[in-house]
Image 1: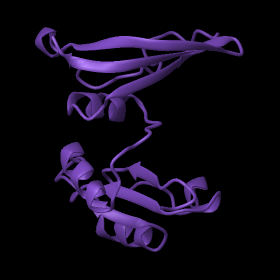
Image 2 (image 1 turned 180 degrees about the vertical axis):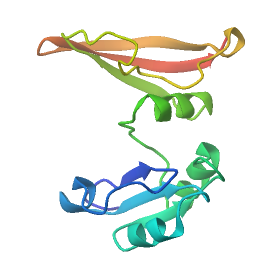
Image 3 (image 1 turned 30 degrees about the vertical axis):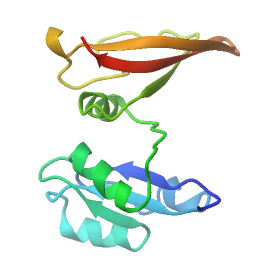
Image 4 (image 1 turned 135 degrees about the vertical axis):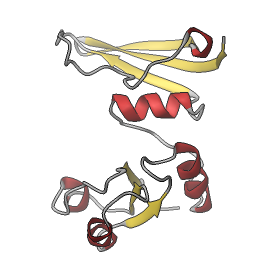
Length: 151
């Protein structure tokens, strides 16, 4: 097992800049997951800095990605993702725990980031969460939820 965590970036179109902090700061293996639609030249540049996994045609296929990561011996992920990735992971049923920090600032507005973006869930797809705990951190609170079966 590596001393440093493996950093994994889900990047369907291989847009991760070669000079990004991902490749400069820290050590440990880096894995970039792209789709088949990623430009070949961008993928080749990423291969100089990271292990590249191809999963999915237009966008990264989450189930295929998880299976390929298992082949690398990766069974657990800690995800620090944006709303689109968060939604995709939850929708595919690969999330078992959610830690959510609620800070002391309100951003607001139509363009504000949300926890789970994307198309949203229908009433039949709603995800149940069980509150497992919470912790006050500075001027915010960290909520720990376990993910239940769908309704």
